[in-house]
Each structure stands twice: as structure tokens, then as C-alpha cells.
Image (cartoon, rainbow, N blue to C red):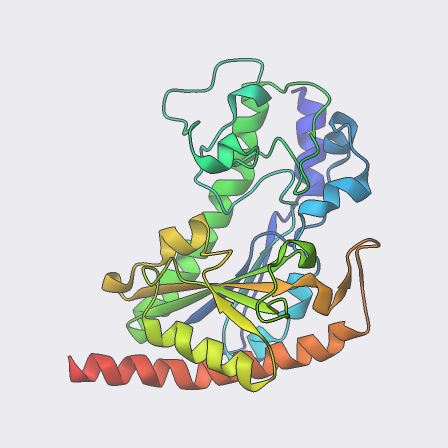
Length: 299
């Protein structure tokens, strides 16, 4: 990639992510929105065979704004500014699709994961509805540069926030925030789920975190499922290490609650959902640390 193009992309994506810190860190929580980025580099738009509107189908629309109240309750919120269609930080660093590049991928790349095979690796080949993103293959160097310049700094920052929480409180609780298309949801008892919680089938966090979060949403009238169809991605799996007192829970929100999925614009339900999420956040930050501390004291 010519230096002028590289510099232009870096300028557009600086900063690559935002961290909204609390005035005082008073809970072991970290909130993360890895897929709500909506800064599309002009060079990327030129490379794509899709319209900007079509590329946005992979976004978790406005999830960062839905959770914007988190810092007021004493926890940081980290959010990517680059879009998921450009680079997906909820993947291993090198889940690389050989069909994307003009050169062979390195031996250390994971080319066989189900995510890569499905076209949704670290650098996606398709958008969420299956359309091919690129008009032609890119150089391997261009792909690896995205990982070096964007993926690795994002995860260093996220890991630092988690370490800070665990150092101060003895444990950390990562809430990984996402949205899901309403059309893909399977109705249960005639109703599609509003919220899907993913804890890797109990592997990524203490079960009481999942149970309390489900109860909190349910008490506000939301229909909640656990692990189906979304059990958590790389972030939940990688950072969810309960034996090291590092817990991670993924939250998927039905976009039909707050978004016109054709126009990609917020609906009248946005503010009501945002207020409910602030209530959920407040209750989680108050109650869950006490639950975990009581268990640790018993041990």
C-alpha cells in the first residue's frame, strides 16, 4: 500500500477506539463494544464492491451509544471506531481467509476455523448477509497492517482495563456488548428473544453472573435466552477465565427493539432501551461484586 494511502487511513482511524473512563473506578466491571464502529476509511470504500449502506449490515448499530451511561456507574467503556467489516477484533488475531489475499497466508494463521470458512475471519470476506465485500484480492501486507495498527492496540487496551479492575478488586467482569438481527432469531413460545446472554455454556464466567443478569433483564420485561444462538465469541472465550478470577459475559440485543434495520436508524424504542440498560448496569455493578465476594469468602 502506498505511504500516502496508509497515512490517510491512519488519520481517519485515529483514534482507533475510544475509552470512556468513570470518574472513579468503583467496580470490577469493564464494558466493551467491539462491533459498533462506523468510521469507514475512504480507501476501504473504494476497494469494496458494496455500497456504504450494505457494508453497515455487519455493524452492531449504536451499541456504544446504548451503553454510553456505563461510566456514570463506575466502569469504563471501550468501543472500536473502525467497522467490523474492515477488521473484527472479536476473532483470533490471525483468523485469515486465504481467498482474500494475493499471497499465501503465513503458517501461523488459522485458516480452518468455522468463522474463516464462513467468510467472517479477522478480516471479513463477506458482510453479515453473505455478500462479498471486495472487488479483488488485497495484499497480505495490507491485511497484516490492519492487525498491527488496530487489532493489537485495541486488545492491549482492553487487557489493560481488565488487569486494572482485577488488581484493584481481586477479580474482573467483562461485559461484551453486541446486537443481533431480529430476522435471525428463532421464536420461543411465539416470541423472539430480546436478549441473548453468552457465557460459553458456563465456561467464561461464574454462573451466578449469568443468572443474575438474566433475572435483571427479565424483571424489566425482556425475553432472555442463554447461549442460543450466541454463546460468545473470541473476546468472551479469551478473557473469560473464571479460575483466574476473570469473568466475561456476552450480551446480544435484538435490533428490532431500537433500530429500523432497513434504514439503519434508531427508532422510538431507542431511548427506552437505553434507560433500561442503564438500570441493568446499575444493578449489575452494585450486586454482582457482592455475590462474588461472598463466594470468595466462603472458599
